[in-house]
Amino acid sequence: MVISDKKKLLKAGAIVIAVLLVLSVASYKFGNFSPLGIGRGLSNLTDGVISNDGYPYKASAGDIEYMTMSYNDLALLNDTSLKVVDRTGRTVSDFPHNYSSPLLYTYGNNMLVLDAGGNKFRLQTSGKIVYENEFGFELLAGDVSKNGSVAIASKSDKGASMLTVFDSKHKEVFSWVCAKQQIVSVDISENGKYIAVGVIGAESGDIVSDVYLFDINYKDALTSLKFPGTAVAKVEILTGKRLLVIGDNLITFVNSKGERNDIDVSLDTVSRFYVSDNNISAIVLSKYSSAYANILKIYSSSGKEISSADIDFQINGMCSDGKHIALLTDGKLVCYDLYGRVSGEKTIENDAVSCCVYGNDVYVLFSNRIDKFSVRGVTDERETQTPIEKVDEEVIKN
View 1 (cartoon, rainbow, N blue to C red):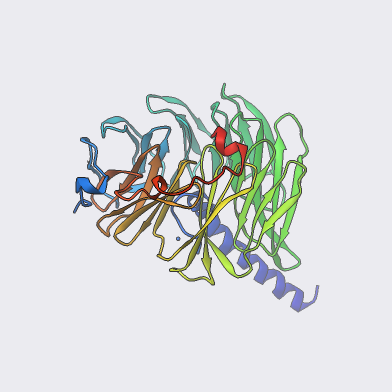
View 2 (cartoon, one colour):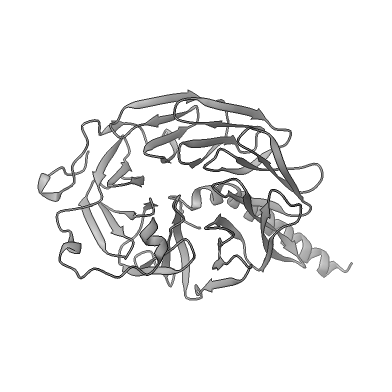
């Protein structure tokens, strides 16, 4: 090997290590409120935005590592416990943990908490700890399905990383070792049958990512895709065997045959995205990397574009429940429907950190509290607009 080849490999190795350090946690947060590269609001009744009697809920944003929905409850993860708060502002449960770097994954009422860099994970609901497992290797990422199946990405003594799947009875039903690349993203289908993983490594001195789709009943991957020059950040299973892949320089939808449908991001950069439990994808693109010129694109569970809307403000937080998309900006909460129309706009204090949406409610985490608002404001323009014809049967079903 010549010296130039050695330098190239060393450089590639350094780049991959740096990317992995970022993506190992960033891929977990990226789909919710973290960007790539990421007093009380006014309560005037005429705004049509009214706080619930149980809110504001006293909480410190500095203590909350992660806020998300677990079915219709709020799940609040901090460095010592996972707290669940219902829609009335009542604390349903507060289960302690001793994880040094906890990560949280939810589907419906199932919550997976794992210790990134440690070796423990547990499955719980709002009412009980279902089980806890002490794994044999350092944990990287994970996911939980609607039926309680769990997918775990970890280090391995047989390769660079490993995928392990446990069914709803807590029994190991699938395992796959990635020889040279590290797993940075895992997603499991709602029935626990399919698992998608995104891995990243280096070839010939350049970063390369691969995406695999597995069926737990078969050893070999159903779909295998290579993305040279791309750092994959997130892989999501949509309906059936369809996938959404998001990287630092690409967005692509993959159909059940493994065929790609790339979204042009040559002039824009992926800023934020959120995939809801019903697999509606909301993606924000920054025009020419500008923080104040954005495009909100919404896609159905089959990867068809439902709508596109220009946004002229900086986005500080984003969430979706598959029916509404809530965006936080300085001093405002703005909600959109699936057709890119503003359904509500609310003036709030500018210390908002993140948000969650479920049904007609939006929960906003401020520096010292969580408040609840409606997705609709005083000016609901949809009442005067001509209804837009639904572009996809899946939208009707969802």
